Image 1: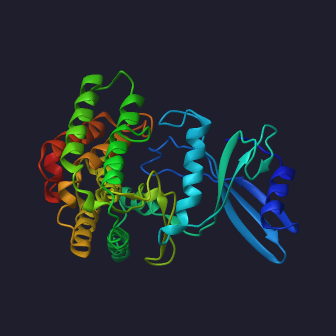
Image 2: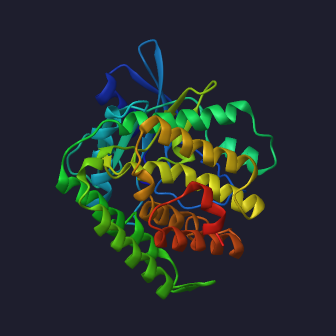
Image 3: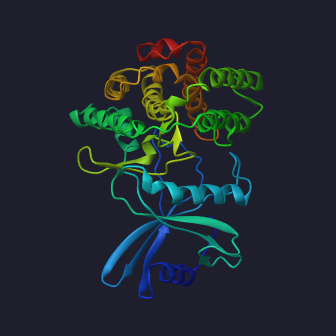
Length: 361
């Protein structure tokens, strides 16, 4: 991310929050990884900023996006993401609020928004513990608690709640499916990020997955009634739990409206990943949570078609967690089972949660 001086950051805070704003501290937020530090790649490094306005002490998170693959090569790509974050975060229930969007100038000063060299978004600080830490505890042999079940069910009900808000826009639904395939952060961006030959993963294998996903796009594209309010990146690192089942969500991505299966597969893929790493199959506490999540969502949402739309979204999430860029330390066996899962889910007419272990063989 761009560097900046304390004085520049304090001047920015004064321009945004008043002349009496005083910077107290700032520093990078370390994102601890689950699965024994399996997850490595990230789009940027957030900075926690603590400042005083009058007698009130406030904290916020300043986020940027680093240049790189996945559709982030140009400053305009990264600016689009920052501007969309600022515009959309406040409209999703439980999401942290965005306080401002601005930019760095050529001298790494901060301002709001002319002569921009790189953009940032300033979000409110939310207390809580990342949900991936709950899964990490279970992956290390921790006992399944009543609270674990309650949290999984609460997350599933939350998705059913936000997905209940619909929008009729056939073109937008087609766009969201198109972006699933071609967006730099999604399927084609991921397949392009794989080495030409990595372990058993070849270009031919990746191409066949792309082609199968595009066939799914054509099956789904004429179902615009499914267009719903979504989070867009609903995985454990983007959920912060406080006491009990109280939580906030972070970093919704790519589109305010989309296919509900995107959110459901994003979370449940992580139950499967953790279980594959620990046991080589879906079993134990992760099987309980996987099934509970799907059962709760299906019952609460009454969406009978979500399992018929899940396949290409599971393929997308599978390509993320099997990626040597995002998860460089996975075993060959785990990666192979994820690719078996992707292939078999894409081949099936409808995803069946009870068949997960069969899909992984």
